[in-house]
Amino acid sequence: MKLVCSQAELNTALQLVSRAVASRPTHPVLANVLLTADAGTGRLSLTGFDLNLGIQTSLSASVEASGAVTLPARLLGEIVSRLSVDSPITLATDEASEQVELTSLSGSYQMRAMPADEFPDLPLVENGTALRVDAVSLVQALRGTLFASSADEAKQLLTGVHLRFEGRHLEAASTDGHRLAVLTVKDALQDDPTAAGSAEGMTSDDGSLAVTLPARSLREVERLIAGWKSDDPVTLFYDRGQVVVLAADQMVTSRTLEGTYPNYRQLIPDGFTRTIDLERRPFMAALERVAVLADQHNNVVRISTDPTAGLVQISADAQDVGSGSESLPATLTGEAVQIAFNVRYVLDGLKAMEGDRISLQCNAPTTPAILTPADNAAGFTYLVMPVQIRN
Image 1 (cartoon, rainbow, N blue to C red):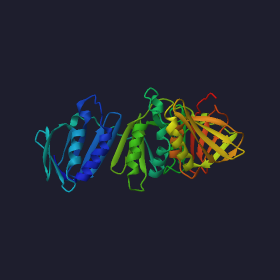
Image 2 (image 1 turned 90 degrees about the vertical axis):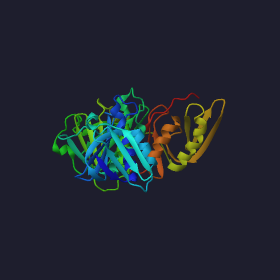
Image 3 (image 1 turned 45 degrees about the horizontal axis):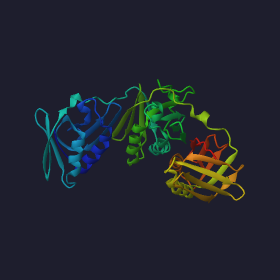
Image 4 (image 1 turned 180 degrees about the vertical axis):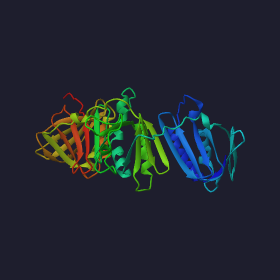
């Protein structure tokens, strides 16, 4: 294998695929990145794969001799990132492909390689269901839900985001047991996937298509698409517990999370007796300031309403440290209420929203509360469980 390519393009590609390289590999080759050069297409392909998440991308290169080899991802990335942007990079292997020489204007480096045939094949979906999803819509759905997924590996199914396709609409949902984020994007799909028949292992009881994917994989999908400058749809393939996302010359593969995702719709109350309508940014700013004291104790803030004055009071009381409170004007319906939340959960939801005004709805201090944008054109619902407080 011998080729010449751009330092900047190679560095960018390495940073992307290295996210899928195992930090604690079960086999030495999983700490490597696979490089495949093709003289016919004039492309250099890079692949990282930890057996759960796989990322593949390619870049243009002047390929003198085709070939494939694997190199330590971390070492290769650190060397390439430090080379001059102005100098092209030459990669060449010896006859046995046991060593790769990397040459730049500033010098040359030799790295011990491992054979490409030891690198596991990325799962390819050939006969599965194919969904063409609008890229902007998919990013919107992921940004509105990824933050609410669980970080607790013991709750494996909750460490992912549940994607549900019905008609041409996409609904994304995630929960960690304390909060729930649901975002519905209309006309996110190019065509109705259910019209073509069911997909094995992906069809829900109501006939829609649904799959739960690890948040880690979807963060890479979001990162990949967010930097993608194209109006073309993203293609999502599903087959036998694997999903492949294709965007131009980049690919992310991921295993699915098996099991029945909780029926989250039944958690959302049908109606509310109390509503707080207020400006989103001033509300966030007040919460951030009061959170300084809340962080000292248990992250709990109290939200109290005064319908007569048209005010909402946000307060925190950190024992043996201090206390603080702020008041904001609000449009209130229903009787006065005092309800407490983990301030970080509330802030996460507000940051995921768009629009100037938000609505906080609840029935009682111990029942679920809902945060939504006031106009809610985005179809976003954020449920937060309150914290029980003793007066």
